[in-house]
Length: 406
Image 1 (cartoon, rainbow, N blue to C red):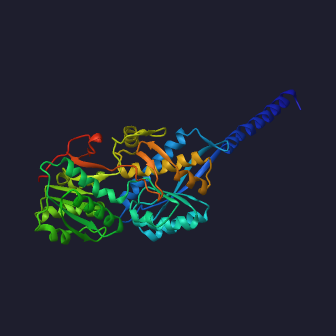
Image 2: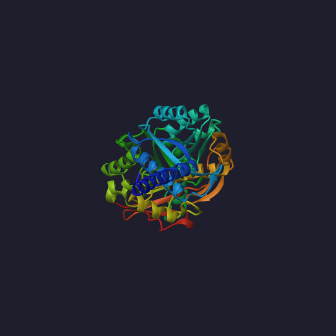
Image 3: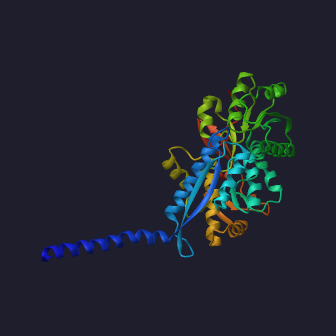
């Protein structure tokens, strides 16, 4: 072989060794990364699809932030989270079945569905499978009265949803109204909300009308409205989700029912509420698990205003409380994994049970039943098409406009 050919061969051999070295670097790097798989069954279709998609966005945003900013390690490996999704079609039985499918694949850490009926079904499965779940979408107090020990809810309890608006009206409305009519969907969550609101209203001296119930997810609430029409209530308070909430406002207008104020759970903080109803949404009150004025911060999201700004930059719309509570649930899971220094479901469960932290979402701490009874609700109002915080006073962005006039 000529010297020239020997030189070429040597160069090729050296290049081959270099290429082997180059390819070995990612393999070594991959060995230094611990991918933590978390299961999430959420309603991407069906009656709760709007809220379910917001929930998924919140989970996705958390995954992105944690993976970009995490510096902590577990057993010497840098952690990265991977959230895998299943569509539960807004049905409790599917929501539960999906968690069993995750369990069959060895996925023990779970982020919840949206909707109390779905989460209630999931909590039972989590207990049986010895999975550990952080809940961002099921606030019904009844879920947490069954002795479950493996489900942790970052939200304020359902009993506070209507109660918070009643308190805000009592404190801020001038002149103070006399009567409140309670209308409610007939699902368990909405009934719990209504019971809490009625209890608070009576304690604050309001005359209570109703409650009147209508089918969950209906777009026709006229029968319930006709039952309270003759009473001419000062306030109509609806325990609703988006579909019923829009129908309640539209059909009140059609029936000539004009109270001093409308107040609703869940629906008003959803951005489509104001765009769907237009002028009819003006001055409607709503209860919210989170607003951009919430106090507290964390190392992944910063404070609430940072969260809101970065979320909008990524998704192209304002962050709703549904987004924020989902991110908060994911955050609680991540902090507990870090605290446990393990991905073992039992160890993460123990870490969650003693978690006590401030975050962009506010305080996250769980009582003995797994509820976050330490975080207050906020009250928002639609003003000039925008969602603004009006209560509690310390977090208010604007004064509550009173009365509702159309």
